Image (cartoon, rainbow, N blue to C red; front, top):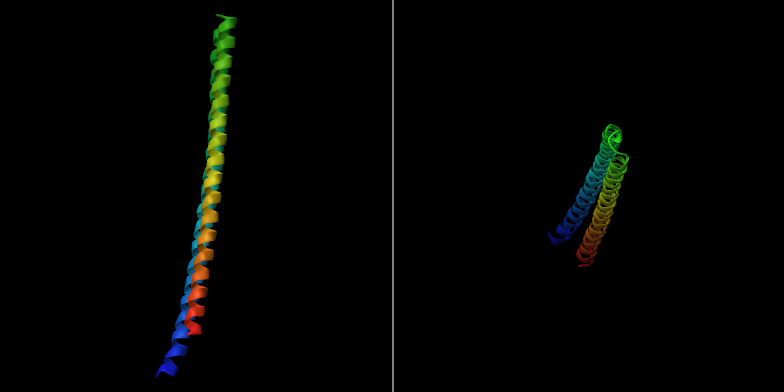
Length: 132
């Protein structure tokens, strides 16, 4: 009976390894899909933010043109204020992009490490099992 059990157990280990590798592949695909979705969402946010910045700049320019007749000094102050706000928005957007890209890289790295560690453990288990 034990002679029949060992090949059956070895087969079960191989099937388990195939399932683990399949699950890892599915996990990697799912993470890659989520990353692609995140990138698309980030690109949409960038476009929307740029559009909002342009719109805000245009509104600022219109407001400044209206007030120009009242005071040249007021116009310059408003223009500087709007320019500062615009620069701050662009800097915030760039920082957000950097943070998201860093988080995405960390997630990919972590997934790769976890996958490698899991495969290593499966292989060690298989060697230990087959060695006995």
